[in-house]
Image (cartoon, rainbow, N blue to C red; front, top):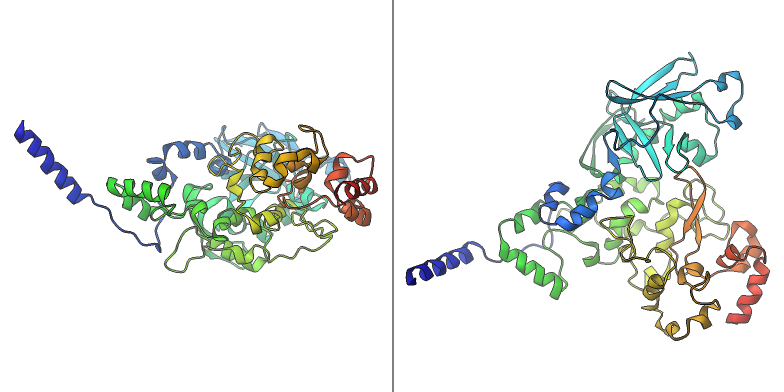
Length: 470
């Protein structure tokens, strides 16, 4: 028995000698290991992420990933865009052959159908984009997409821009620079896009990326040093747990937005959700890498957050502005958040409401809508209103107009991504309903009051606001 106890002590001493706490550098560079490696330890969040839109945004075509109708479907121009008998004939055909998916488009010069094999599909919630790999390496975005909400194919860019679709226009779209998906769009749909070579006209390209979709390392940075530091060293794991939970320190060799400085934290989201930037800044956004790079890698995008001007009345698709200068287009959603005093003066962050691992889920039920839950979140800062909320809202509790979101996050961001016009909530949560702007600009400057009380009009709303709030 004594011999056994001695052996245990010796073994324990040996284990401690071989496994001791290791210090780590706060500045580091690492390589990418892939989300599956992260899932070996982080099993619960990995399961959430694996079923999320971030993980599934880019996939190979298959019966489970393709949501469009490829059952020998023929597509004809909408009636309002036809200009003659030739336009009555189908201009596209979507079909399956040889265990692959294809989209054929009519050649306006010959009238024949030319076919493109689909090599990747992008998206599945609102619409789906189809990509064809050209011999020179460009992943070409095909001009007809599938609207999940409309349950039909539609020419997305023509719809977005308000232009007329035609067989000739579809061919022109496929030669445009921004239809080279792996040179233009891929940075927000893959993890760590690298452009190794390209021609100025974007007709040839050599690209690669670390992982399809928005993987763990797209938001947390490359993980090789993190893996090496913890793999096989349980003392490091225990110390990291205590340092993180008790002292609030960052985890070794990995980044987490909640542990980062202001600006760097929201850069994680802005890389994809803040596209209202100048064209000259797109390369900085592509090269962005979360973390604490020791070799000068781009890891702070905050200098670009407000570089694109808020131009009253701008009509450019996705970056539209209302006539009073507030963000309107879906590409300005993140910008509306940055413009909010709640971001500038407090610690309101995207991940307070949006679950960062299952990104279509709220952090807790009710946080993404007008509810008692979201009201409680707002009242954490605005506690002086909590004793008599009705005196502030002048609406009965539980009715429209009584919740914080109703007045301070009205639906004023135009969203056309699904193939139809709808409005989602502005994230400029410090905004106050302004009927005076509506009186001045009309429909070009909506306000939360008359979005509900449309029949009464903005002057009626202004009179009540003056009576209530002096």
